Image 1 (cartoon, rainbow, N blue to C red):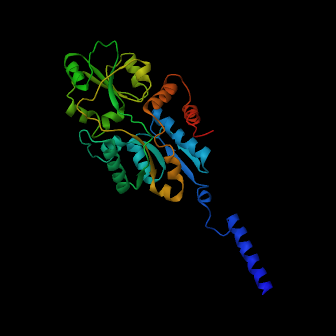
Image 2: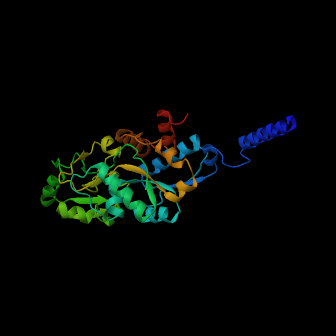
Image 3: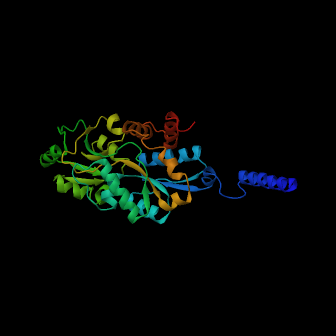
Length: 308
């Protein structure tokens, strides 16, 4: 009997040691989180160069995931099929863009941010098997901006409509703005009947310089762009509520979440961490001060105490 008890005790001890070493499978959560590679994409403008590195550096520093970057890949016409096909796993989209430019649905006047978020989350899961995680904390919407020396006196988009009927105005916007359905140029004219003398298609990163040099008279500026404040540009209110809410949210392929346990929780640690003012300042550091977007992203994470 004593011999049998000794054999049983030895067997239990051996099983315990093997389990601790992971030899018998059924490893811990942290074991299952290791080894995965996550590809993060983005759009070809400043904020969308910074955000992939905020997510990526956080994953690199705080988890065992490897990260690959596909910087400046394109707008929704390229990023949507890229994430649908598995060419990328993650990128940051804006709720209103997902709703109107991708799902081709219309936001209701005054619709809440939560309602828009719920609609895009459900729509993407059904159509693309892509999940919207938790919002990062800031909204990047449009404001029609003009130069302070233009002589215009407009507080709202409707004021600018009247100005366009009496002045020669050149409107400049990124090419994608003219192509967007739902919240793009053509749809905007149905609500605000501008009478521009001319329209210009500009890179999103140079349209501010075109306005600063008064080569164009009006642009659809991003509210998180640091050049609005640095260039002292005049901004106007969307008084008819044409544009929907544009909360910034990381999107992830469901298959990538299934293959990488812990990925969802790790990215969601960034939820609510970025304010509009913080995003505006980060953009200004890159666009005006000439700092590298990777450096700006890393220093932001350090200041927030997210990485050491």
